[in-house]
Every structure is written in C-alpha cells, then in structure tokens.
Figure (cartoon, rainbow, N blue to C red):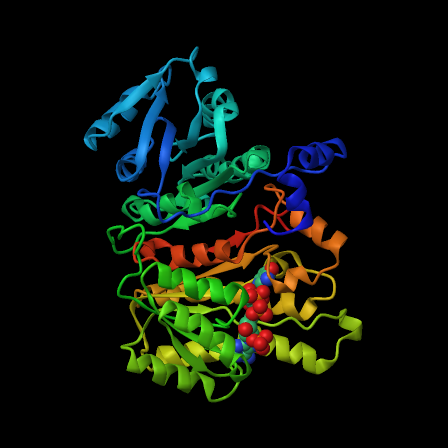
Length: 472
Ligand code: NAP
C-alpha cells in the first residue's frame, strides 16, 4: 500500500479524516501467505436447498481445509447436511438461531443446485439474512448452482440465473469488509471438477476477484495437487514477462513450482534477465508481432518438451480518441494484443507444442468489456481476445486443452502510477473493495486457470477488478 491515500488509512487521525469527508476507508486485503498450511482456515456456515446435489463436493473440499463447519440448527435440510459431512468424516456443529448473532463466520456457502422455481429463492433469504452481518473481514460468500441455460425448464433457468444477481449484490454489500462473493455454476456430472474453483474462491489467492461467476464443466478428474506447489513439473511460457503484470505472473507460476520461460522484446533484455535469474527461468527475446515469432516460440518449447502453460500477457496501449487516432496506432494495437496471439497459437497447435492437459490463458481487460474513451483500438483488441477464448474453448476441449481469460481492472503498476492523482484515486476506489489490485492478484487468477485440477474450467472470463463499478 504505497500511496498517499493508504498512508492516511494507516493512522487513526487519517482514517477519521477520510470518514469525515465521506471517502472510503478500505480494509487491507489478505493475500496468499506461504506460511498458511491450508487453502482456507476458519469457520464456515453451510446451507443447502432441498435436493442440493453439490453438498458432497463441498464437504470433500472442506475436509481438505482447516475448516470448522457449522449449519443453522433450524435448517429444513439439516439431515442432508449432517449426512454429507459424515460421509467425509467431517465434524459439524449445529448453531441455534438464537446464537447466530453472537457468532462470526469466515465463509458462508450455499448449495442452490436443487432450486426449481422462483419460490425456492426464499431459501437464500432464510440462510443469508441472519448470517451476513456475522461475516468476518476478508470473509467469503459462495453460492453454487447449475448453469441457467442448461436447465430443464424456464422456471429453473430463472432461479439459477437469479443466483448471479444475488451474488453480485451481496458482493457490493460485503465489500466494505474486504469480503467477496462469487457464484459458481457447476454442470451436471461436473461436481468432481469443482475443487480448483472452490478452493480458489475460498482462499486468499482470490483476494481481488469479486462479484464473479465461474463455470465448471465436466472434464477429466484431476486430484487437487499440493496447495503451495500446484504447478510442480510444469513448463510455462509467459509473454511480456520483464515487468508489470507479466513479471508477477512469471514469479507466481515459478513460486507454484513451474519452470518458466519468460519472453519479451529484445530492448527489455536486462529487466527480463533480472527476473528470470531470480526465479531460475529462461530468457526468450522476441517481438510477438514479428513473422518469425510463432516459429521461434514453437522451437523453444520443443526443446523443453512442449508447453503445459501458455500465458499471452504482452500488450500495448496507444490511446487517442478514434477521430484523432493515426491508422498505424490502430493496426499496431490490434496486431500485438490480438492477432499475434492467434498466429502464435495456430503454429503451436499445428506443431503440437502445447502438451495434452495444456492451459492457455489470455490477458484481456475490463476496458474490453466496458469500453473506454480514447481506447477504441485497445478495447476492440481486448474484446476480441474474449471472443477468441470463448469460441476456442469447445474446440480445444477435444484435445484436453483449456483456454480462459482474465480481465484486469485497476491494477497498481507503473502504468497506473502515471495517471494524474485525482483521476487515479477515482479509478482506484470505484469498486466494491474501494482499492486497487496488485499485479499478483491477476497472476493468482492465471495460476488458478493453469492448475492441473482446473480441467473443467474452460472458456471462462474472470475479471480481476474488485467488482469495479465500470462495465459490471
Ligand atoms: P506493461 O508494464 O507495459 O508490460 C507489458 C510487457 O509486454 C512489456 O514488457 C512490453 O515491452 C511487452 N511487450 C509489448 N509489446 C510486445 C511485443 N510485441 N512482443 C513482446 N513483448 C511485448 O503492461 P502491464 O500493465 O503489465 O499489462 C500487462 C497486460 O495486462 C497487458 O496485456 C495489458 O493490456 C493488460 N492489462 C493491464 C492493466 C493494468 O491496470 N496495468 C489493466 C487491464 C489489462 P515494452 O513495453 O518494453 O515494449
């Protein structure tokens, strides 16, 4: 937290001053800490609809956490909850309604997969209304359901789609505690693919991911690897790795056990060399927009036995209103941010240099979703990235490869430091968590996509923006 606003937040007089003038006083986000043995540690209140089908998958994951699991004693599904906990030898405690207001919870988890009709939505009120005030700072709210468009009838589709509006609104209500809320839609028969998504959103690795909807599809089951070294034995290539978000991606993937090849333009050799020396990675100098780049990348990957993880992070901005924009700025931005990725992928697909089980992650942008004045070229390219990812997901699934995208919002980098103070403060605060994200927040989301257990996470676009009010 290295800015003037944060220095005010760090002392009582400063915090009181900010409160008095009506400015937000955000609570610092808890991020991943290698010293924490489990992906989650704390108290969880759990609820389910009648015929909830994901309870077993939730309990399996809670068994792997340091979780003290409770349920409301008056829940009409208490018997199902106890049975699912017993099946996983998980001790579970009933909390009387009269006790709820004196308890604190680090996570509230509700399985809504059994919802059939609009009237079932009352169960959300019954579970969350008394519990929400008891959520701890940096707490988690997770609502699980089935994909609305795969519902059996219109009323069920409506009830499932309602979860999204519910979860996003809760995110806005709990954001002042630096707590987050996400919805997870799990395909029928994909419960065994839930683990990577569930553990990511429950953990501190998702600190700046808020108000998002994650889809889990049916895929090969991969047991969740070691929490601290999930990418052990994997080879990753990261473009634009010399600084900013790309540097953080390279460092995070290496922290998680991957062998990293960092790519950047020749002019960035010194910076890239410093980063790769730090993480034991390898330097690859290339301009991704050059005609030779796809073959250079493919040849390098062949020498390493192919890529398990490919992160298309390199990108540029050339900002001007469309009326004032020179044509070469338009072309250059589309080419580097979008067309170069497609050309590289095409060559890697043809030459089979992405290994089976491979993970491709593209970096889009919130402005590609919302649009931005002076960034028609950039937003066009970044929206194109989303279209590419969503289309290619089905095709690549047949080769056991996934492709997903992150869309960062306001991330504290050299780029955002250069924005004038007042504009920067507004950009930084205009989200549910009232603070900017760190490059590592984007990197953690990419590492989640890259996780071997994320086999059912395909074609997702996750915003890393603290639930920005822009384009939400
Ligand atoms: P950055 O600091 O400018 O880093 C991008 C890196 O990519 C630089 O090292 C850059 O090298 C390299 N690069 C650019 N063109 C290249 C090319 N043709 N071939 C190889 N490398 C190239 O940017 P960042 O802020 O970390 O952003 C990283 C990604 O996140 C970008 O795709 C960006 O659009 C996206 N993003 C960032 C934010 C944010 O808040 N920072 C928000 C949304 C999305 P040179 O610049 O030295 O040429």
